[in-house]
Length: 123
Image (cartoon, rainbow, N blue to C red; front, side, top):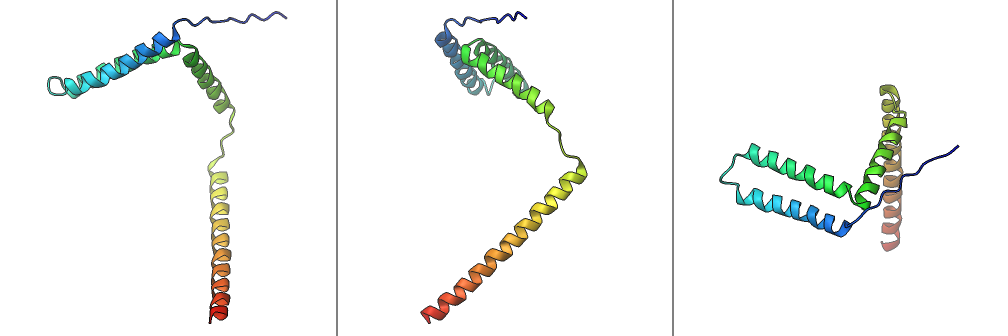
């Protein structure tokens, strides 16, 4: 069985990260500078476009590509999770509440008993 592994070559990653930083910083500055001239919806749409462009450039770096692959793998793992139904969730919640109440009662009892002993010793 032959498997092909594509090796992606990433070049100029430092420059790409500078472009991402410039896009984000430029967008933030432009958003505050043009706050009086343009409606909010226009500024939000422009920021979304700038954000998409920054993400596109970031994903084309080595770290960005690794992060994107991690997100895809995480999505596959989330699909494998067997989520509890309503009955299981209710039962588990009730068990947790009962354990918290019992633990609280035990700690209260220890605190009260040790406090009583300390008051007898101190006098």
